[in-house]
Length: 76
Image 1 (tube, one colour):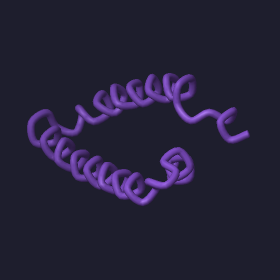
Image 2: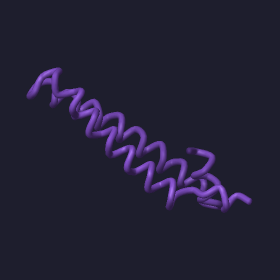
Image 3: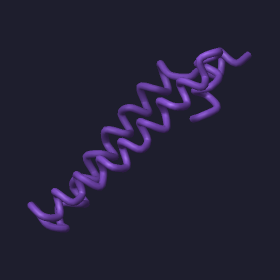
Image 4: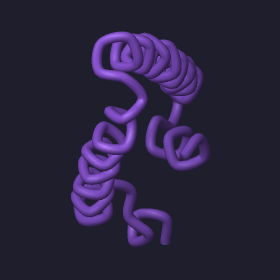
């Protein structure tokens, strides 16, 4: 991911890498926050259903990214 981002960003690779690290850290902290809220409000049985929804979203994003994202044709 970092390599594809750096190649796509070109001369702005440093800024793009900083944005990637920031987004990654926000995702980790957000996951902890949402997990804590789910645990307190709905209990541990809410985790599998939440993960199923998140995996479906990730699957859809990956399908769209495969079609519109980083292309092997661009590297050649």
